[in-house]
Length: 544
Ligand code: GLN
Image 1 (cartoon, rainbow, N blue to C red):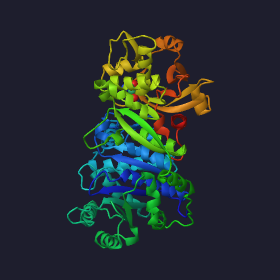
Image 2 (image 1 turned 90 degrees about the horizontal axis):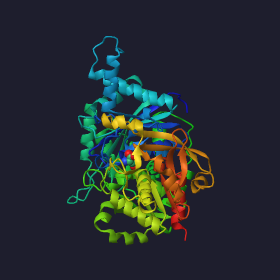
Image 3 (image 1 turned 90 degrees about the vertical axis):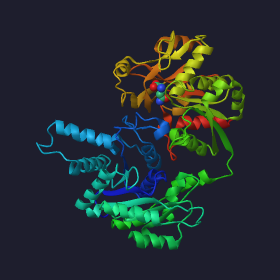
Image 4 (image 1 turned 120 degrees about the vertical axis):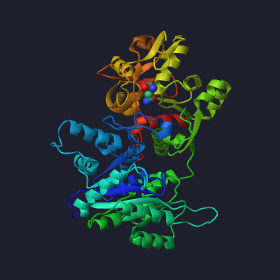
């Protein structure tokens, strides 16, 4: 690199949301990494919520958790998966968190008696955070994704921050618009006008995009590329075609067909950068290989939505972790949704579970669908079907075992049945005050904690190590008062948090594969580094 100043790429969305701005941002990051640059990515969400932790997954999609315990948007998960590196809390902000910080500084007299104003103090706080992320990550490139769509009232101050940063560092900032080009059925041709309007709207905010990623169902033809170039004032080689693809992991390679990486490198006048895409290409080769045998996994969930977000969004990290592990085992993943509530009304449907090579009960909250999930776990346990329980999945597996093997018929979690006579899952004492005081934002057991693995267990074989770290997001735990009883009947605690003696992993040794974790291993799975627990689960699922 000829310049040692950090470069900032702002990514905004045009025309409509949900066209893959987050994955586009992550893909640009991957490309720049393949060119040998150090890269990090920042997500800005325009809502008032201080973090994503208090939102229902049906409305907002999965809540992702960082190593350092921030509950954030699923795009941070996309960045981690594509970049194959951790993204920390420095790299996430919302309107709520920015205002909260500015107001706190004002209360602390940190503005030196000045009148604190929306502009420039809010954009300045945003710029400070972006620069902090650059410094902490020692990044050559910081990608900054501005949530929402241009023209929305909510994200104006973030666009203002982008404009102000460009004003002070014109050589270090690039603006990129990810826009959608519809093909109306009755017209049958791709329309560029909405994108032209989106650019005009950006212009009104004082921003001229340097590049446009043109999302559509099909590739952009030359005529359209020229039209966008002329009417949007962007060089035609900087208009990048981004058609729909089967797998999101193809996107970096697709962008490279239009030489996106080189365009960025040239924009900043950086010389001598050489790319090496071999590993990623190898991965995509496996992803696209239709000849691979399948592995059929059923996921018993409850976040079946109408609404803006689909089921796939609610469980995105679990789905991606299954895919990564399947590809690593040279299998084609086939994932089926099992509506847990359905098994409550119709237990006979359980016999259909035999069709699956493996079953997952993922994380969750509240009572809906819980009895159905417990029935699914019981079926997997008694029919020797490989089973993986994640967080709530572990808690419900313990309840199932307590009820049906230890004969504690009323066993339950105090999350649902606070007065149960057998609270096999209960909350830690420090959480009681949080619950009583409704102090519920960002107060769960969050982020990375150590776990000691017991020798001679399946978990030990899986991790090949005695001490690991995994990410958590829960308020309830296995009640240690019941440990002796559970262990006597064959439940093995194969992972324990050494500081608080909390159960982190359980397994049933006589079963083909019955493992459940109090943490969320799916949060750490990446396509180039599939998680060992998921790998091993899939391996068991495909073994005869
Ligand atoms: N509801 C459970 C708890 O709070 C499990 C949470 C989860 O699955 N992430 O402990």
